[in-house]
Image (tube, rainbow over all chains, first blue to last red; front, side):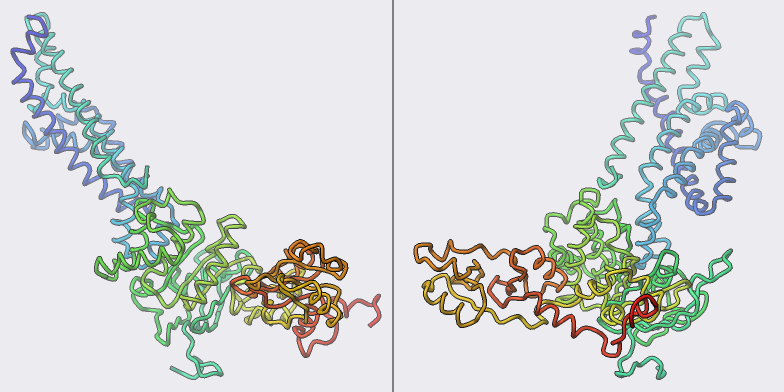
Length: 215
Length: 400
């Protein structure tokens, strides 16, 4: 069976797999964004604290994904979505946290001073001035994380997670049999298509959520 | 209020600082040491001094951007040293050198910041934005622009408009015109002065390191030395004619007497008696006026009283040359509200060594020459200070 033929036979399965892959990535990305921005906001004014937060997030990134997925089962998260999302979130934090800290720190002190001088509380300064100004940088972090965990998500098949990983693993373990190459190819292509989709999504999101005054 | 809050006129100070000090951690000497001063309603007080003298720290303690280490701050009699700082700041306009416009907000949103925080309704905010754009001479179409689309001078104007938005009775300005080019700077200063006179009448604390700016803008100037110690706190006229000590003298720098001239307006001095005639008058009457006055020149005005030409006797000898073309054009013209400094400048570069003073509409008001200016300079000298200034009196090589 040629690859094209394979696609026409299995496209509805592939679509379902793709949606599962995307949902897992989106949920993880959401969780990581909340955690990354929260810790970024909490630590950006304290160099020592932000160093610690960044060090922790970087260390997570150095753990091989196989090991981390294994560990996720080990601590009782079971199989399927739960360990997948926990692990993917953990990997996604670093870029978002780092960019949040960088973005917030790059706001001109004169701007926060004038905000303060007009009587904005710390919370108002953060929500009305600093975060909106840092948003393009934070978005860039989310984008990097998205691409990173789109790839890592394939390994989630190892813990029974959703996504193209299962196709790839099955293909690789049955190399030489009828559809093995097609399985691997479709899995890889699926991830690439998702990556492109995310790029488009972020470009549109960036246009709508970033002030025209910041470009 | 205790008696100390009232000056000899019985007025209560709008801003009163009482033994205000600021020590920064890790520094041996305090940045500001026991500063006490009073600032009255509607006056522009300029804090001026060399870099690091504590003038900015002093100003920033008034709205508690910097919290004082000790001492009290009173605003309109109320002790605000421990008041909620955000609440306090919403009623004090604040402009800094870097302006600090919010780049992600439109000009309208920037200006509307404080009114929105104070809970004004939309319509009122919008009307206020329109009003302020007009006040600072920017077209209404700028509402929806972003700060990056504006020039430095325009941003500066928006900065001032934003600080005035909720009509605070007090404004703090930290070198607000420091970051623009000299020409724009002068224009902004002039505009600011006119605004203050015509509309604002606010109590303004202005920080600068530029003594010329201080002289130009200040109703009173506080010259500060290290740790914000007041060397002299007085009107620019007094500081220039009667500096308190050598430090003040040094700080004013050379040319104090010339600087003094920039404080007097030409409308305040007596103009010289000068013969004038209309362009429509005949040659005969011009000749007669010249002879009667004993002056060598007559000034010719057009039908709207605008000065047009200077003519001497020889220019009007022959009736063949029409008055419109006789003599030479009157170009050394100053407006009545020009400073004596500018007037003198015009006179020096003019052909005849005199300048014509006109009113707002360009109509003739009088003529000033060197003699009239000298007379008024004579009157400006301090009454008690008839001896030579110290740097001359101390020199033994000169006869006393």
